[in-house]
Length: 354
Ligand SMILES: *Cc1c(COP(=O)(O)O)cnc(C)c1O
Image (cartoon, rainbow, N blue to C red; front, side):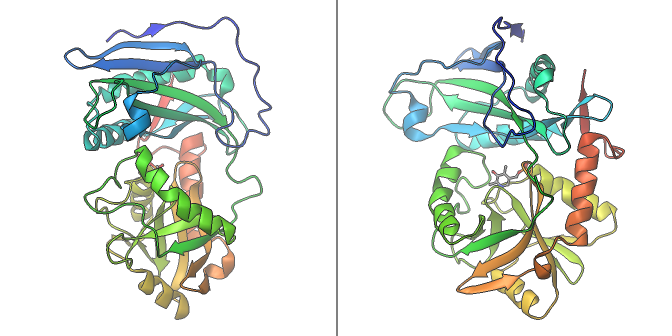
């Protein structure tokens, strides 16, 4: 497929790159392509990022038939633009699409389009340590029709947002609320897909946790409320007696690329990493008998987020004295080092944008 490029003449003013926050600013251009039944994906283009018209009957607004991804472009030390495992995001987007009946697309083609778009927006990539250009691919159903069935037309977008360091004042362990009333996803549902409904389902518990002074929610399985699933928009890992344990991929948790990368790197560094069911009780018991060494979340936004406290059934459990532990620290340094180019990319995970 051909990729048309239409650049805007009136470039936007760049924001203060030292005070970006997350998701507040968007670059001048975006990638768009359309899908029509019988034709397939067509009209791939890089165009000015501008508001567009939608019919109020547009299906995505009513039934949430939509998927998304999140990855980052980094400006390496020598000025190289680096992407971290973008092909994995495209594979996952196609798995998410399959779950909500959105047609498959050509992953390598979109990776190439993202590289072109990022190159065009090179000046938007912040350079301070920890900052990056966040890349948000997403797909929406476009039929104008009130009635529940898969749409016959779709639109694929990629927008870009310069984002600040997640840790302005160093890595601070977060306080986590173990949610025992609401659930985010169930097996057979949408949990493994990056689709809007999962995040709508999470908001209420997030709000309750925030009111009580907790940063994130730790989800338990939707059936028995016993086994640990994941944290907010991160997967979760526990270090118990030196062994790293993380919930197995079971259909209701999101298969994180940071999770996958952390498992590979930890095993390479000689850690025992086990993917299995782990109950909240096991973690509480380990904390009480002193064998819970560390707990942390993994995800593109923060890379690694150490957990300093867990609130469960009226009790507050402190993890590793509320401090960042050695496993969290090592994996954070290794992944961010590979992303920025300060560490050698032995795994061949980085795509250089030229
Ligand atoms: C995106 C996401 C993650 C983390 O995935 P990464 O590929 O590591 O960024 C974890 N859980 C949920 C619910 C997510 O949406």
